[in-house]
Length: 204
Length: 204
Image: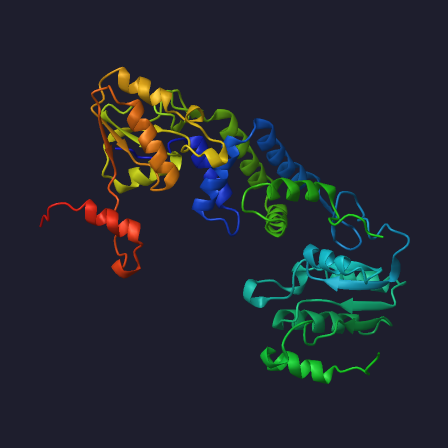
C-alpha cells in the first residue's frame, strides 16, 4: 500500500507549512511547492531568506507603531511632515492607503486593531495608552480618527475620544458618506443617512 | 514626501518575493507578509526552512521520475506493486490523483509535461526516451497512457505510441466518456461522441 499522500516527505513538509498561511488551501500549497521545485535554488533561497530576514529585522516605530527597519519610521523621522496632526489607523495597510491618497502630510498612530470583545481584543491589546501619552506630551493639535466604519471601529473611536477628554487636542473623525461612483439607489440606509447628516456647504 | 510604498525595506523585499509566486498578487503578498510578521519567529523559520530543504533535498526517482527523497520513489521500490504495468502521466499531481483512486497497483512514468509546440515543449524536454528504454529493458507488459484529454495530450499519446511500435508491449489509453454525475444534455459533443464510440457491454 502507498501510505503517504505525498511521495516525498520534504515536499509534504513544505506543503504543510505553506498550507498554514491564511487563505491558502492544500491544493494551492501543493501547486506553489511544485512551482518552487521547478525554480532555481537561488530563487527559493531568496524567498526563504526574505521571510526570515523580515521577521527578524522588522521593528515597530517607537512613536507611531508603524512597521519600519529602524527605531523610528520614515514618516515620523521626516521633518517636513506636520507633527501637530496625528491620524489614528487600525493597521499598516491603512497607513499605505492614506499615503497613496497623497493628501495627508501629518503623522500616524497605528493601533494594531480595533476593540472587539468577540475576538477577545480589549483596549489594552491596542496602542491606545501610547496615543494618550503621545498627546499628553504636547505638540499635537489634532487627532484624526480614521478607523473602519464598523461597530468595532465606532466603539474604538468613542473609547479614544473619552480617553482624550481633558486634553486640549481637537478630535476629528473622517467623513462618512456615499463613495465615489456609488449609485445612490444601491447605497445602504445607514451610509445615506450619515451622508445627509454630514452634508457640507456646496463649493464649486 | 514619503517615497517608498512600504515603510520597511525588509517588508517590501518579502512582499516582492512572495508576489513572484504564481497566482499571488501584490495585495495577497502583503497580507501574507503581515500575517507572518505577527507569527512567532520559529514558525516563520520553519516555513523558510521547509522551502529550502525541499528545493535542496527533493530528487526525481531514477526509474519513474516521480518526486521522492531518495534515488527511487516509494512506489518503484515497493515489491508488492505490479512492475509489469506502467502508467504514463503528465506530472506528480496526476500520480497522486491516481493513487487516491486506490484502483491502481502498477508503476508510473512521469513525463514532466506534454508535447506543446506553442509552449516550446518538444519530445526531448519530456521523459519519453527514458520510457522507451524502460520498455526495451523488458518486464513490462502494458503501458497505460493517462494524459490529459487535450490536443497536446493526444499528440503526446500518439508520439509515445509510435515510439513503442516494434516492442511487444501492449499500449492502452484510459477511457474517455461522460464523467460521474455529469448531466448528459450539458456534455459537449466530442465527449459524448467518444462515450458512444467507447461503449462497453453492460455489466450488473
